[in-house]
Length: 274
Image 1: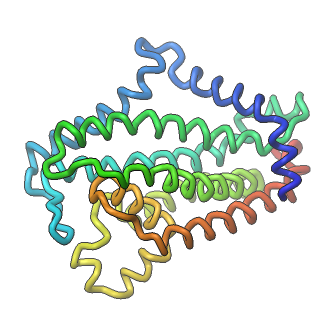
Image 2 (image 1 turned 45 degrees about the vertical axis):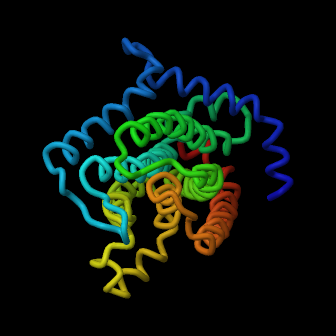
């Protein structure tokens, strides 16, 4: 696999070109163009701020001594939603990426793994563009929620999520070619996965911690520890789970190996099937 990655590095300019094309194509024909990459997360956060800061100011609960209510809850929610949208969009789009680029695949010979990589990196850039919006809201509207030095831990959380998302995207892109029902199943599975991940609720609330089977189920979900890393980095201002995140990285590396291996085994069938 190491040799495959080295071979793939020769096509980095192609990946950059395809990512640039995807970013331009997404908002082509719109009035604000690329600025929608900033406007979308801003509008999303504005909606949550109105709902939980004005309409439901006492929503959500407590985590230890930290109040996560009102405007702080909208920031907590947005902190989890941003990386989830990156993951969710990457997996769903990867399920279609070989079909959408079927003409390109049949006409030009190039490493097909470039396509899911392009999908993940394009959504990574949208995720990164949403982070300044999050930081500004924390600075101006976060009550007793100062940014701490732990924000420097962000690249580690991003790296762990990148590895895990790439593995899942390779696997989904390859399997969907032969099992097309997977596309429809996937959207429902991701909805279930969303609610099984502590995005709209804190992992440490008593309602969860008092039920050991529930704690075990959530702990077995790799996205739990990835989202928690973002929450600890931005919202709680403390060290993320330093034991759980390396284990999650290991799980991500195993998934990346499995996903890439499946993709590599099936690559010769893609041209005929798409």
